[in-house]
Image (cartoon, rainbow, N blue to C red):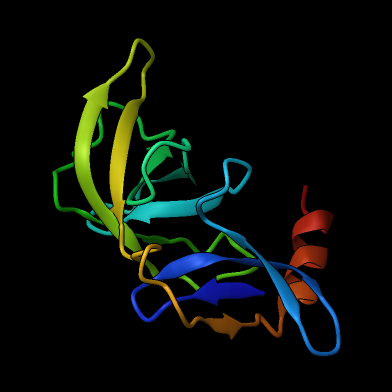
Length: 137
């Protein structure tokens, strides 16, 4: 199950009991989120580097792709947890690395310092989707 704020993605549910849920925040260095650039559809993996609660890093975007500061970053359809098009953040910095990929800094939509309430979303077709994806690998 996904955890969202009123502004965008906040994390995922990792355990549940009858009355409680345990969430993993997007601000966890082990959290990975399939994310794309809305304007061109190129996707990569969004991770938090542990530095600043306001920013995450979008990896795996090739340097031939046109990326602009201010571009919207959103979830992809490749997640069995989040629906496609959920807000994640906006591009705030683009740098070239020694590889063929950009290092794209994303200002997160969710303000984790002010986060009080969240909503839990569930993909009711998750099991079917995972089975189908597993059969086609």
